[in-house]
Image (cartoon, rainbow, N blue to C red):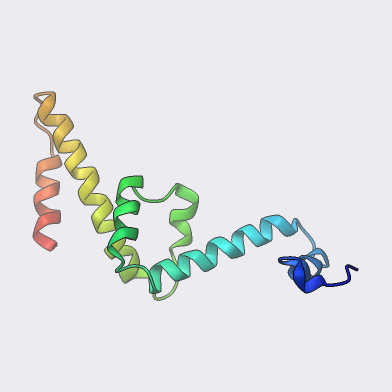
Length: 116
């Protein structure tokens, strides 16, 4: 054991995690992502710069999008995904207009705008 284990980041958590079966790093990764999602849904959902970055990223990947499914998180997810959907609809509208196509995206966009 090191002389000062508290000086090593996550040393005690690592020792505890190594006593459990499975990969300790995978477990830490999942726990860290889960804590971030909690923080995002309950503390950062109304932060404009956070939502703008999420909109630019077009939301989350499949794996992390499913991590947002948690008790009490629906409102936070709805607030964040509304912006992402608006960005996607504008992108599709712009593409269909530049291609001279008529699509159902405008109708979907009207519905989204009605509920916003």
